[in-house]
Image 1 (cartoon, one colour):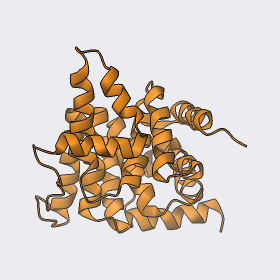
Image 2 (cartoon, rainbow, N blue to C red):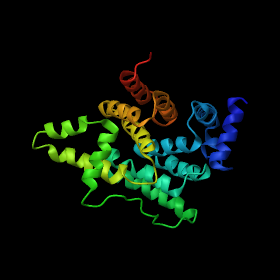
Image 3 (cartoon, one colour):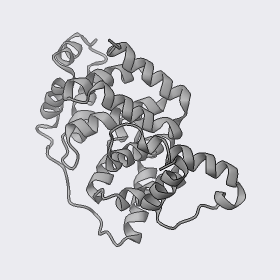
Image 4 (tube, helix red, strand yellow):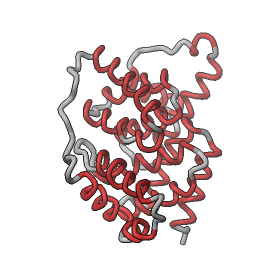
Length: 251
């Protein structure tokens, strides 16, 4: 099957019979877009359609390209992602893109869910409380990054220890400990989020190593960042690829 036929088949799977307005106004551009995204990128590597849509959602949320994000919420449902998985992927963005942008994405998700008669709120995925969120968050950090986390906290200047505690309790305690997505998926999505930010190469490298530590190998990272190309462009993709190769050099 050639890429034109592949793109038509994949587009229908994701979006049904919806025809984008740009197909009428800019048919050449739409063809380039469709044939590349749905005829090539979607078939590169071993990620399944569910994983691809999760990656797409977090990158579009990071970039705040909300019309496309909303379309992909529907596509995510069409490929079999559960409402919980979709919501948890979006929630995972908050420590990296901030609450305002995450809330924008949550509102778009809620509109799609309501249109599909999905009752809100969804069942809570929370697994921590006020007494143990810091402890469990720190344990998750150590599971991902190793004992270097404890050394970072111990060596932090006294006027900056609160930042380290926020990282443990908020980023990892409030989000990484939630059910709905497993640790490997959350860490892969985080890698895509920080890659899409641009200018966060230090964090990209840290999350490359974190992914390797939790069992997402180099090929999985390359597959994920390849899928990001159409949504965040080549410069940020190439920067992320350079981070992958620095942490895990080619043999």
